[in-house]
Length: 267
Image (cartoon, rainbow, N blue to C red; front, side, top):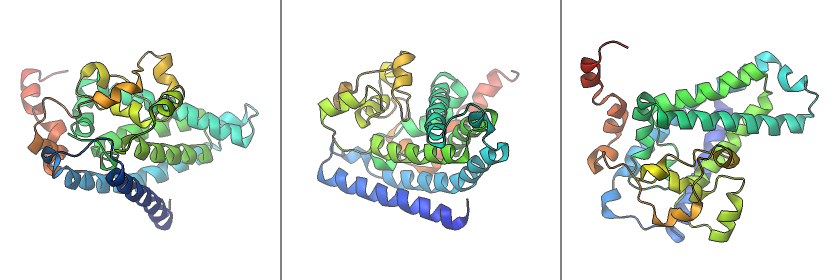
């Protein structure tokens, strides 16, 4: 990805974030409380880091399938449009697995907690993630793309749809309940993802989907989106100063690691 292409992509994402932020002001789902002040500065800092990391990672993600020639799906005789659709579906399942692994593996949960510790969820939460999480997700995209010979167009399409839907999922705007319920039969809707940000573990450890909701339904990790209206955001073991500090969020995966290694110095 050239610098110009990267800047264009970021420009589109920033414009969509601005539109979502405006809608959050006009028709918010939940009101912001005083305890949530300061979090957006930390979110902005992590967003900048995510964008910077994605420049190199997105370039590599597009080049890997080019190196394989896209022979995996071509050999199946699929037409180009079907190759793209198949690529999106396959990569979305890989992202589901990557996301779920960050909840069930203690070492990865240390990293993913940065995203879940946000005491409020709005469009600024979208790219509130630790750089290590960005790398982990990248590996779950490029690895399968190379192994299966997915076409570059399919990888690019997946990343585009994923980025746009991620903004919609986190935006603090209401969606007509009947429509949200209907869409969540197949698609990951804003309310469905809001449930995933709940403080309650029974809700947090569900709705891992990124684009398609069918994987949560098939693998029995689905929680109805209607519960989003009573959700409490954040983590019980993270206080407000830590959750709203850029430096503290970067250090969060390492906090307490020294004591853990002292107790268990060997694998």
